Each structure stands twice: as structure tokens, then as C-alpha cells.
Length: 138
Image (cartoon, rainbow, N blue to C red; front, top):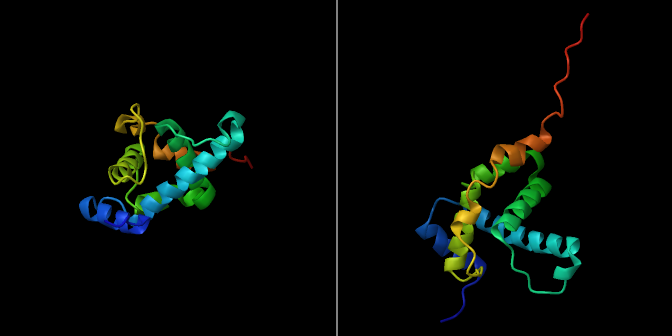
């Protein structure tokens, strides 16, 4: 049997699990690449090696990638794709693992993605004013 390309695999996954759009899967795949690149930049000991990313590292990378790509619209875009919790990212990752697109090690589990951060604190807080401004008195 011929290997399926990423888009074909995602189409199959979306037929079985229609909660998330195809765009969400593409985002997670690109977000993994972004995360690996950032980890290799920040930790010289990881450069030049095949790199396994933990759930925590991936969640932080997906957050940074979403903010980089979509700015204050990140939460809205993700919600449009059906993604509104860290657990949803985990569901997408494990769907991709089931289809051998991503790999896992013995320590990886869905629980790694549960409630790591709220989407409000991750995607809204960076754009909120640092302090409440005092009203001007006349």
C-alpha cells in the first residue's frame, strides 16, 4: 500500500473525528516544526539532533506560534477550527500519532495536554492593558 500524504491522512482523520478542521491539523504540524526550531535555537545541546518534544514543550510552542501567526485573533482562529482547550491540541496530536504522522515515546500521554493553560490566559492576556488606567478628573 502506498503511503498517504499529510492532507490525505488528515481527510481520513476528519471523517472519523470531525471535531477539528483540517486547518487545525496543519497548524499543529507547522507548530511542531516551529517548536523544534525554537528549542534547537535556545538549547545548543539539542541542535543537530532528532528532537522529541514533550507535551508541555509543544503546548508552549503552539501558543507562541499562534500568537506569532494570528496575534490578538489567535483564540478566535483556533475556536473557528474547533480548538478551544489544550486538551484539543492533545486530541489532534494523538489522532496524528494513531495514523503514524507523529511519533510518541513511552512517557507521552493525552494527560500531558490537559489544562496546561487556559486559552484566555494564553491568547487574550498578552493583549490586555498592563494596568487599569485611572479616569481623568476634570
